[in-house]
Length: 274
Length: 208
Image 1 (cartoon, rainbow over the protein chains, first blue to last red):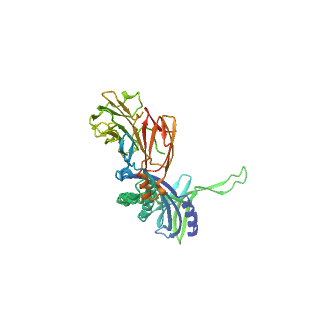
Image 2 (cartoon, helix red, strand yellow; image 1 turned 120 degrees about the vertical axis):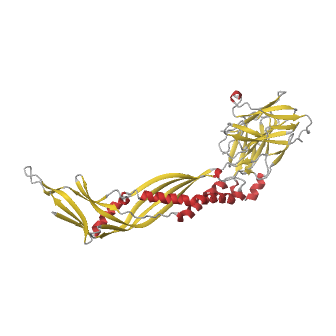
Image 3 (tube, helix red, strand yellow; image 1 turned 135 degrees about the horizontal axis):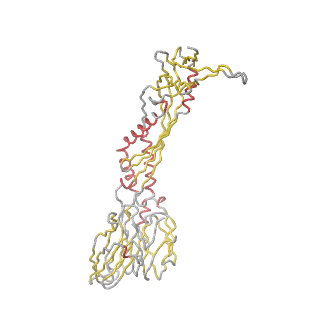
């Protein structure tokens, strides 16, 4: 061993915060449940957390209270025509006496139910802890000390958002139906028909959102069990003495091998020079 | 804003024709303007008008409900044929909750050559239109004399008041191409009835 570099827990925290600042992701998808077509876009960002360095032989970097937050931007498009029955207005006969003809009763008009789109924002925030192993990787002109997450369970439960969704959709349908004349006495009943139809699929929809958020979070490099995330990087070629002039070039040394471990709650990198 | 054009009837419209002379009438349900009949489906539906009818102004109403058949790209009338009597009248209208179905016209003639045509209404023909959206609807009769329908939103009215107003259908007489009254005020969900008291080839259409 020719050189040793140690990083304290505080220093490791700073490195981790720098790394977390770049960890965000956004993905979108859509699916249909009968008359409900749902587009959803998930944004996730990481923040906070504190590092605990657990000594060899475990060599674990434990990240406590990491905050995973974001939101699911949802667009519910509801084809009311697939849910509501045919209703013709007015619900009574309107007749008029016309000279030379007689009593003419005017026709009813059957309502063409609209499709409505309801945008809803579903924020979420969870604190998690995760363990990371250390590894050293030859990255061409550099050596890297990498983090590789140990598989961990992550549960994002959006089911408490059911009420938010139901309230937003109830309000939007009520507004849309209020634009239609002569169904005033029916609106509450019609709204309940739509909410009843939605209730039968809402848990499935929320479960899809939760799974999607979970999958998106695991797309972050930090949480990928197969993608090492560089925490420290050392150039293999280090300048030992600067150039003294045209005839006195810089003196370099080369790091031929690098090791990494945790000792006394410090992240220790050991270098062997060629 | 609603669409209103007697030459292109929609599900918010009704067209009525009184049969004054006995005979066998055949009518077609058309989409295209006059001159393009050969491009239209040639299916004809029958109205038999018997001699022994009521006196003028005492006839009976027959309703023909048109259902859009997307597969056949045609309106199918229900009933397919009618047996009526002199001075009885037939009202055609569409019943559907399907959006975006094409506008149509009714054109028929008797074996004696009497013609009726919703796209050019004759004497004692009637056009009805239920207004679903609020607004100020300026229209022209025969592309000339102007009338207006002022449609107030129902949203600020208690349901009972709204229903009471909607239970009345204002009647606009068209005499010599002039609508009378020239202005009517209604509420959404209310129907206006245009009656061609005197005139031939009468049209009613919104001013664009």
